[in-house]
Amino acid sequence: MPDAGPTAVLPRRPLTVGELLDSAVLLLRDHARVLVPVAALLAAGEQLLLLPVRLAAGTDQPVWFAEFGRFGWYWLLLVIGAATEAMIIMVLGNPAARAAGAALLGRRASARELLRPAGARWGATLLLVPVVGAVMTTAALLGPTWLIGFALLGAVAPALVVDRVHPLRAPLRSATLAVRAGGRAGAVRLLGYLAWWLVRVGLGVGVYYGLDGLDLLPETWQIPVSLLIWAGVNSVAYPAIACLDAAVHLETRIRTEGLDILLARAPAGTPDAALLAALR
Image 1 (cartoon, rainbow, N blue to C red):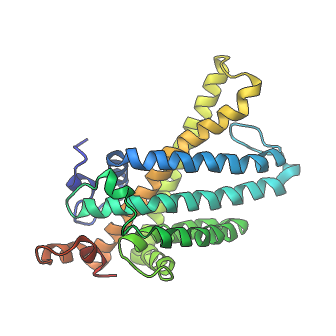
Image 2: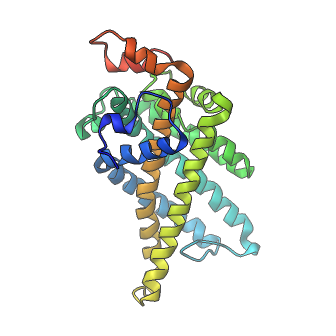
Image 3: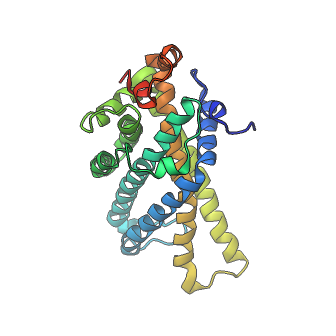
């Protein structure tokens, strides 16, 4: 694998699906020291939030499946989980999008830059987080419509912090980009989520049963250890999906708006924010 320099992360050209997935991983690798700790805190909070619902549903760790007689509680668990995942990924999408924008412009954003609140539009991001959560809650309640909601909302954070759109326009901007080119951006986001879901389940279940098989997991520690395992797995998966959202957003703009041409023709000294927001 080549060095994760700015050019290797996001080339200024349309990318294949495989290249987009690679770009997301490289972007995460470059900025893991910022994204992973933030994701770990949010993922731990999510596990604590979901625990009472899991207990009410009578689920068994580590997979948290429930008996059919408790299907109502289990459905509620899935709905809340879908909403919290989407909200956490959106929060992480703020620094991930700024890191991706810098990479596209040929530089690597520093940790200080990603943590600096000036110009980050955190207020607008946090304002839209519950909106995304409410949309995903409604979509998840209806079952398969969750797929549509998740596919359409991937670029809300990038639209805010890279395209600099008004907060009320960001969800529409995200949905518009998701359906361009035959829904390519939305489909790639779903593919990325599925890939990381398989990784999460494989690692989460494998580590748990591995410890259990070695008699290293007393019964009183089964729930705490399961929560810790899932929080650890999600602390990598969530920022990876956020990085994929940022990469797909910029690549879709290159593919459908000619962002690469704009960057090539921009006068020297044009501010970064003006370059990336010019075609919104």
